[in-house]
Image (cartoon, rainbow, N blue to C red; front, side):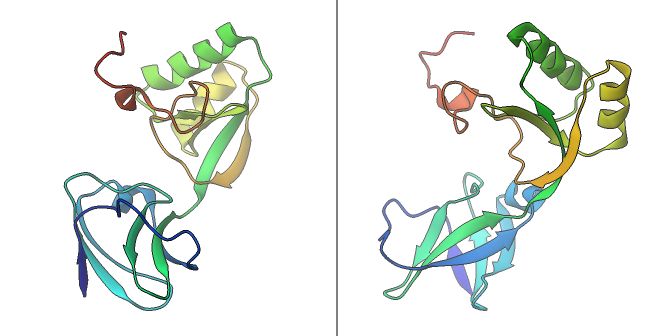
Length: 155
C-alpha cells in the first residue's frame, strides 16, 4: 500500500489519469484507505482532506486523481431573482442542511427534510445525481469558497 500525505504540487497533464473513486463523506476525512481503478491500494494520512479532481500520486505511466462519486441531490435552478436565491440559501442553512451554489443552480443532498422545506416554501426542485461539494458558494467561479478568499476577506 502506498501512503499519501498531500496532493501533488505539480503533475504531468499529458499522462493518462487513473481514478480513485470515493464518496463525499470519506473524502472529508484525513485518514482513510482506497483502491484506484487499476487496483493500486493507497492509504491517506492527510493534514488537509483532498478534493474532487486532486492529483495525489504519479508514476512514469499515469497520474492518480480523486474522483468523488456522484450522489443523490436536489437541484434548484437559479432562474429567480437574487433575493429569492438568497432566501432559499438562508432557509436551507437555517435547517443546518448542507448546500452548494453553482452559477446556474443550488444543490442540497436529497434528504426528506430538504424536500419538505422546499415544498413548504414552494420552491421547485429536481432530483438528480451530481458531485456534491458542500460549502461551495459562487463568487465568479463555482470553485471559490469563503475560506479560500484569504485573510483580507471581510465578512
